[in-house]
Length: 172
Image (cartoon, rainbow, N blue to C red; front, side, top):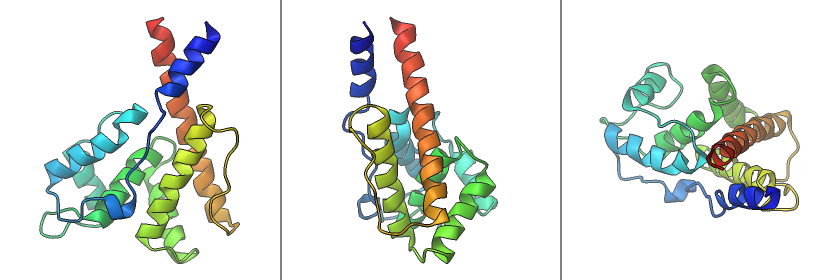
């Protein structure tokens, strides 16, 4: 029974992948389209959907860049995706600060930072769900900022795992 249950839990995340920066829509999505797109990306992780009003509030509070002529491009969309996932484990202000640290101390563009976030999240999730035997070392630098991001991503992966376990076990 245990092996069957763990197989179901592991299989439920097999193939999960966040779109990389260059795969994000950069044609300008309106708020409703952005909301649908982000939810489609994060839904496999089992978190509640983000709403249009939540995204509007993130913009008002300065957590994500303002849309351009009411349209959201890759820069805004990558921030929304990362923010929605990381806010599961820390305050919004901390997520914004982490973005700022990545820019200031690591010199990362949004594209590099977001792609790194995606790789790290998938790396940790696949390990946590038993789809990999070890955690790969991503990137070449060792820094406090990198450790902070890995810690946040690890916490997200644990929440996803626990929620998935509860959901599968409640059905058996």
